[in-house]
Length: 199
Image (cartoon, rainbow, N blue to C red; front, side):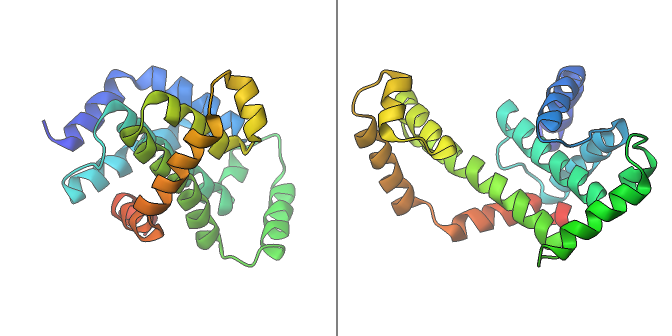
């Protein structure tokens, strides 16, 4: 089975569950997910995988991660061009326009640069966590992920997890990351996976 078939089969087999899951995730991120955007992203992802010939991670986790990142990107792109103003009856077009103007007046990046920046940051976090998960046992990965994503102190980490030598384990993972993962690697993988979607 090809990666494009794995992708579309997984989405079709879990369509309702994924839609509920991503709806909740989007609400948490204050993003609006519509049926059109959901279906449009499926098509774009399928076309991108078909063009590349493969998906970097064709496991269910990899497929859902790739799809969700693409989904967020599409939602943000639509929001940035104010296409949602015709659909959102709770916010007037004037308010949306003002929010849009305020955003760009206080941000030096263009809309596309901001989109790419947000997407890249999310991707970099997922990429690093995935590499750690593949190269360390569950305890090391768990401790690193909490410390990396929440930035709590080592004392708080020890208290919350009731684990020993938390600093030593997290530092060991951090050193491994510094020695084995470069910005160039992340950018190369990012461009390989999302290059077609952002052009």
